[in-house]
Image (cartoon, chains in turn blue, yellow):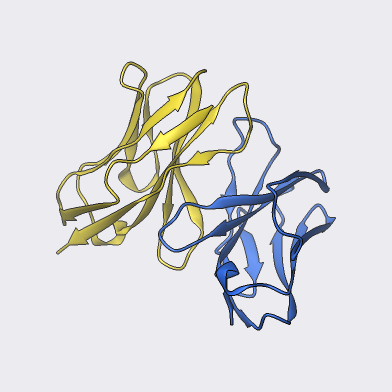
Length: 114
Length: 114
C-alpha cells in the first residue's frame, strides 16, 4: 500500500467556521508533511512532523493548527481563515527525514474560504 | 542555498513528438534531484529521482532525465508524447548537508496536441 489518503476532497467554509483536514497513511512512514498549493504554483511547505513531533513550522499563521495523533494520522485544524487561504492542501509522507527519502503525496483537499 | 529554475511555464508538443522539459539547479554541494508530475485535481507523483551513481535516470511512464553537473541541469525527456502526459511537471532539488525539505521549481505545464 503506497497510498496517502486525504479527506475531504473539497471543502467550502466561511471565515468564522472551524473545520479539519485529515490525512492518513499505512506505509509505516514516520515523517508527515502539510503543503499549501495555489493554482499553477509549486507546493509550499507548512509543517513537518517527524516521529509524531512537530519538527518544522514554516511561520504559518496560528489559524492553521496541525496535529499528529499517531504515526498514521495527520490533521490540520482550520479556524477563522481568510479568503486568501483558499488553495489545495496537500499531505505527504516519507519513511524518514533522510535526504534520500521519497515523499509520497496525497490527492489533496481543495479548500474554498468564503 | 539551493534553488531550481524551470525554463518555460508552458511547453506545447504534438502527440508522438519528443518531450523536453528543462530544469537547472543551483546547489553548493552535490544535489539530489527529483521530477514530480501533477495531473489535474491530483497530488504530486514522483516520476524519477537522481541521488548518486548513474547520471541517466529512468522513471515511470517512459520518462527519463540526465544529470549534467557541468551544466547544472536535470532535463526531463520522453521520446514520444502521449495525450495522457498533459500535466504540470515540477523539478525539485535537495542539497546533501542541508535541509531535507526539497525546493521546488515553479512548474511547467505540458500541453499535448492531437
